[in-house]
Length: 169
Length: 169
Image (tube, rainbow over all chains, first blue to last red; front, side, top):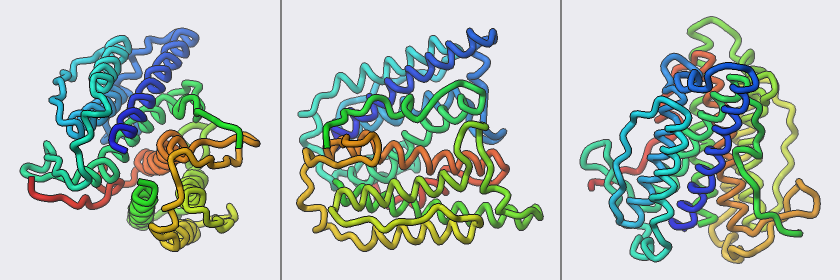
């Protein structure tokens, strides 16, 4: 389950990368600088678009690291353009792709995963995935999507979900 | 994993119920009718708050039904007040609570799950959970949260995540 969750995070980040491309096409069509969207927020005390993307990437990266036991690369929060946000997503995906299914074999549901915050606290691996990383990851991806929708970018649910592996049923 | 995912949906719906209560407290404090929020949207071509809550409930309910093999109760989309939205969440929770872990024992990752749409199509149980129900469920919960945040309701990430079962680490 841990490996499958990480692979789904990777698919969602790829969908997010495509969503960024749709925002860029919209900006070109309307004749504004797409990078104006980096500071867009839904409320004055919510994080801006640029931070939503960074945190989504970090949630996926840290889940891959903590559940596989591999050290996560540090990615500095310095992006100022959509081009740099694409690169940030690309770096998260490269790390996730570097982790293989066998790296997760030693992770039992009860394995303690240490959190950066609060200090000296953690979660059992199962709780870490289900109650923290999954809801947190989608929080930031969806809020990024919501910011773009409110800014007028033409997006639909399928841009967020991506193509589903449908079968006859 | 299927049962644990459903239990997490239940926890998130309970957190959402608490978030509704915070919106009601805010409306009282500011002296407006909280039910004005039911029609709030982030964009004119997005669904309103009331629909976000209904669809979140239905995503959780349908996951519990499809993965356990139990028939889901039909819940009509008739809510016009926060009181009725609390009841809608309560009905989804009651159904989820009626499904026990053993009901999921026969669900293998490859089991075909038929979708309401597109017709005659479905997903393998594993894809249904990871690629469709989880992202969809959180999409609607987070968008509901985002609508309230933009409307001025004082909420934080912890209201969304709820209390985590922290351990020493």
